[in-house]
Length: 419
Ligand SMILES: *[C@@H]1O[C@H](CO)[C@@H](O)[C@H](O)[C@H]1NC(C)=O
Ligand SMILES: *[C@@H]1O[C@H](CO)[C@@H](O)[C@H](O)[C@H]1NC(C)=O
Ligand SMILES: *[C@@H]1O[C@H](CO)[C@@H](O)[C@H](O)[C@H]1NC(C)=O
Ligand SMILES: *[C@@H]1O[C@H](CO)[C@@H](O)[C@H](O)[C@H]1NC(C)=O
Ligand SMILES: *[C@@H]1O[C@H](CO)[C@@H](O)[C@H](O)[C@H]1NC(C)=O
Ligand SMILES: *[C@@H]1O[C@H](CO)[C@@H](O)[C@H](O)[C@H]1NC(C)=O
Ligand SMILES: *[C@@H]1O[C@H](CO)[C@@H](O)[C@H](O)[C@H]1NC(C)=O
Ligand SMILES: *[C@@H]1O[C@H](CO)[C@@H](O)[C@H](O)[C@H]1NC(C)=O
Ligand SMILES: *[C@@H]1O[C@H](CO)[C@@H](O)[C@H](O)[C@H]1NC(C)=O
Ligand SMILES: *[C@@H]1O[C@H](CO)[C@@H](O)[C@H](O)[C@H]1NC(C)=O
Ligand SMILES: *[C@@H]1O[C@H](CO)[C@@H](O)[C@H](O)[C@H]1NC(C)=O
Image (cartoon, rainbow, N blue to C red):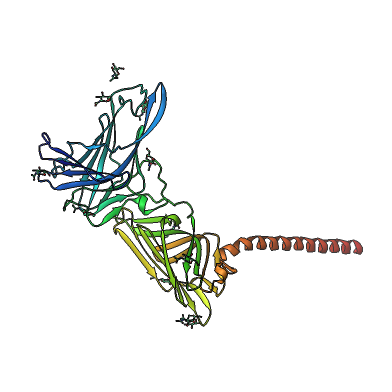
């Protein structure tokens, strides 16, 4: 990892720029460090940046992609700023005088990237081949969506894109912190919303500062297994969507709905004769399902769900926890599985529910490492019930019409006779 360090006094002129070249740790993340006049670090950033810029080349609108090169350096104008007068600035220079400037601001409990400015030089023929225009262009946005709680580092492994006119700046593998106290990152991190909801698509859309609730697409189905003493003791195929209602910083109620990405979780589990556990965990969410077996009735069911997750930035509480161990969901008798293809909602607590789709689970008594015959959920039965009800109603209608016709015929016939 290349380390760029600058010493920034209150007077910006005559600043010493020190460039250390360290060992390359991560393939793409570059480290930048801004220091004040006493050599204390105030901004630390490890980041990877991709740029996509539209420009006119030989009369045609073209799009060019490039990333922040390893040769990028810290702009000597970078500064820790002075409270209420100058803003902390992390400036990055690369190539033919292209510059990315990241400005910070803070309030009572948070700091954020208050503005992002990108200045690019269309005369740089190595990037902008045959550009019709020359000279520099500047784009900026104050709507960055990058921020974290005080004394935490902002972390975002997923892509976080900012669109500004003809330019899209995409950050990924980012860890950064401003207003540092101990010359190093804080222990705690604030994850970006892209990392917390693994399904958020990494598209180049402008980021709005307040997270508006969006219902994610149906969750991908994961096939989870837990090993027992002889073969599997728990099989679970299911798509999982978590639905949390929470209180925002402004006191309003928010909904946080996100999918569990089966590819992005670590699976753990274990079984005893009467309990079977499956836990799924990622950087930002942990969820445990415990199935119980009642030896006297031979019934098994989902008894306990425990969950904790980091929350979106606008949440009053940065983490959310829930558990309920008096549940009785997905019940089957031994050697059978429980199946529910349609979306079903398992209410865990008053503010947390799980939507499942294409679910089939079996805990205990698994024969030949395969699901036993399935007990279907009510929702799926309904799918059959509707045609049956409609069919029965139609048959009834036909019968009524037939009877009415026969009676009518008999009456008119009878009437005819009396005349
Ligand atoms: C800051 O560190 C540099 C080298 O690391 C050193 O040359 C300089 O004297 C230091 N300045 C202060 C004010 O400590
Ligand atoms: C960034 O750009 C490089 C090539 O320039 C590409 O390989 C990489 O996939 C891009 N990363 C993202 C997250 O867009
Ligand atoms: C994008 O670039 C084109 C040509 O390079 C220019 O005409 C247009 O004004 C630019 N759009 C914005 C929003 O800057
Ligand atoms: C832009 O790039 C050209 C070509 O590399 C260079 O001559 C020029 O000085 C650059 N412009 C600025 C403002 O640095
Ligand atoms: C930029 O364009 C102007 C006008 O088209 C031209 O006079 C100038 O020489 C160009 N500069 C460079 C560095 O290409
Ligand atoms: C900064 O913290 C990282 C872990 O967060 C640690 O590996 C590193 O040694 C620390 N650096 C210094 C100078 O304390
Ligand atoms: C589970 O058991 C299978 C074979 O029955 C084995 O291949 C696999 O490694 C086991 N997994 C774990 C996590 O122990
Ligand atoms: C999430 O739960 C709330 C009630 O807490 C409900 O109104 C909303 O429709 C649910 N959303 C989804 C996608 O299940
Ligand atoms: C668990 O079940 C096995 C086989 O049915 C039995 O041998 C064992 O004693 C049981 N263990 C406990 C703790 O009940
Ligand atoms: C098993 O089920 C029976 C009958 O419903 C109930 O009385 C008993 O308490 C249950 N045992 C456990 C351990 O839950
Ligand atoms: C746990 O679930 C049961 C059954 O759905 C419900 O009656 C109970 O209120 C829940 N407990 C909590 C703490 O939400």
